[in-house]
Each structure stands twice: as structure tokens, then as C-alpha cells.
Image 1 (cartoon, helix red, strand yellow):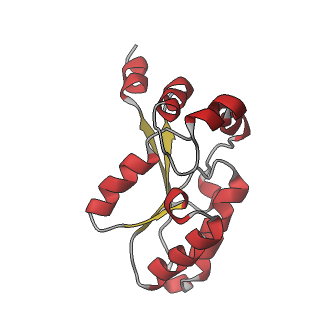
Image 2 (cartoon, rainbow, N blue to C red):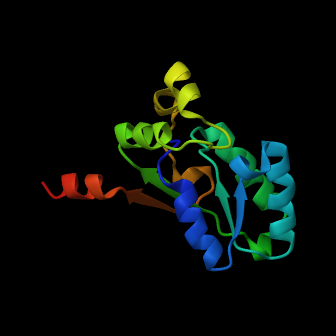
Length: 146
């Protein structure tokens, strides 16, 4: 979801040498796909910093990654799901002025965070992921201990 912590986590990966593909920074999925191809062709570890909340959206990246490698050099594709409470996501979106793609005003008018939540489809290994990681916010981790 928007505001779940994807970009913050992506910055940590960038500091470890990963190539980050961010639609917020690049502006369109087409621009992201061009950079994604370039990075994979150069043998980089790549993270796509994008919601990809439906199977159809994730399929674009999986198909592209697999098309760029031979079967003997199979690309390892992982999913990282940010399970941040929707209210926390919305709070973050509402307090980040100047965001490239989702302003507090647009969130207020269109309820984008809740719409993405309604449209979200569960990530499954059969989509092409070899492993799915789930990242919980501190609040969610504390709730899990109850």
C-alpha cells in the first residue's frame, strides 16, 4: 500500500548496492521497465519500489525478468510484502508533503490507500516467486504477540 514503508526499505537496499526501480522517481511503468531491463542485463540485484498490489501488475515484472535470463541462469524472484496497518499507511501519506505521486490532498479526495487495499490480491509462490517475505510494522509485530 502507499505509505507502507517500501521506499524507506528500498533506500536501505540501495545503500547495499541494489538497483532500485521506483515509479515515484521514474514517473511511469514504461520508464521503470526500461531501467529494470537495463539493470538485469548488467547482472544487478534489483528491487521494484512499487505497490504491485494485483497479480496482473506483478506478472509484468516476473515475465520480464524471466525473459531476460536463460533457463540455466534462472533469475531468483522474491516478493516482499509490507503488512503495515492501513490506518498507519494513510497517516503517513497524509503527512508527507511534496510526494511525487500521491499528495495528501489527492489521498483526501480519492482514498487511494483504501482503494488499493480493496483491490489487493494475495501474493502467491505460484506467480513465480521462490520465496515470499512479509514485513510487519512495529505495531503489527506487537499485536502478533498478544
